[in-house]
Amino acid sequence: MSLHVECEGAGEPVLFLHGVSGSGATYRWLTLEGRRAVRLTFRGHGASARRPGTYRVPDYAQDAISVLDEIGPAAIVGHSLGGVTAWTVAQRRPELVTKLFLEDPPLFGGEPEIHAASTSIRHFVDQQAAVRVWQARGATEAEIEAELVLDGTQTPDAIAAHAYALRHLDPEVLDRVIDGTCVAGTDTTSAVSVPVLIVGADEGSAFPEAHAARLAQTHPAATVVRIPGAPHTIHDTAAARGEYVERLLAFL
Image (cartoon, rainbow, N blue to C red; front, side, top):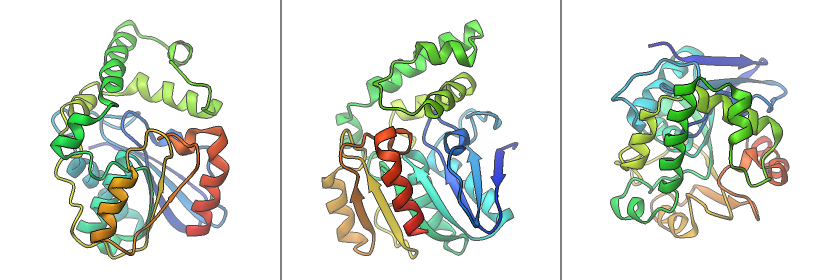
């Protein structure tokens, strides 16, 4: 299967994994001096091939593993779905992972009761409907960008990357988010042997304090920090991006 991968810089590799309905383009603004940034776009997203029926965490984990098999052991930076995928890869192929930097990952989001209580599902239903309309009429990225409903916190590059991703997204990807099967079955109890830093959102978090408390019982070595005022898309938020970068570079 064809996967879109972008590489920049030289040195120890850092694999970046985006969130659902995004793409590797969401990290193009971020450069890592002395390291090799490897930006993977998952199946069904961006310029990677569509593969209907395979849009769940085990499938995305296989995408990441296929890249790691090529570049060798790497630190993984993952946002949301990318964070859950990174966690899963570290459990399944620990020899390929050196550390995990997870941005607001919904590690417990696949549990039926947590999924049922999620207030974000309505957003994905609306997003899927909009994607189908945009793609049916052949909307350009500029047209999609102009129609996005934004709250004024995102950086311009983040908005452009989001419009690009929505134009190329396989709408079926969101079916698995809406029905709760995308991250269902995530193993939150088995060991993760590498250093883990979870950077949580402060508002509308997919990894709230209750989930952090649960994880502390099984993975006490994992560190959790929060960026005050940050929403779920921390790295896309102008006011939070500086601290996000500081946390990432210090951890790497």
